[in-house]
Image (cartoon, rainbow, N blue to C red):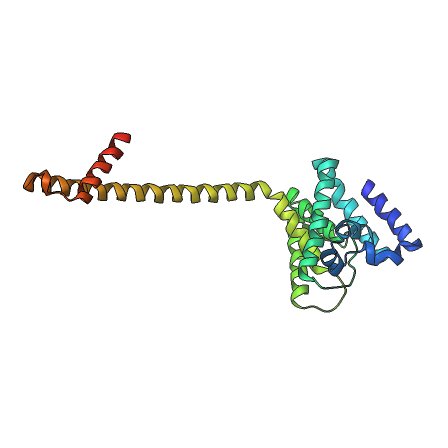
Length: 247
């Protein structure tokens, strides 16, 4: 998988000389938002905090990403990978807006891939720690719960929990986008129907009031003659007649 090769190459370059540019290439919310260093939302995904950080992310990318890439095709897979990775970075910035600490790693996109795998193959068995069998859908739920609990009870472990949850969130919204679009259109159509109904109801009420007033004026003419009408009643009767001729 080309993404793994790119990540490994960048990690080697990072060890050689890129570490001195972490503040420019990592995701620093205070700079990405405050100075619009938006490229950081992409570049941070290709940097890692050490060999094991890289190894774990690339192992998950190979193990689960390969199946998703075969299922979707390379183009859709790459689009999803970057959407979840960038979404993870955006989420991290939102919740750590003034932080000057760089966030690095592909973990946000990796969590997005785990979600995609869990939704594509929910009942497929995964061996946790190569020993414990667990269905993919339950693994994703457990990982999401762990991240939420970690945020609720921060321990200063230096892990970008918000980025992990952002990868899950953006991945879910993207995978369910058709459903979201349908719901938005349904709610919009419902709102339009309600608005049209209110307008129709208003016109019906106005027409009913007008008919009552016309009937009252005609009754007055029958009782007292047309000369008894005031100028306002004559104008109202004339306008009502014009409106009826138009309809």
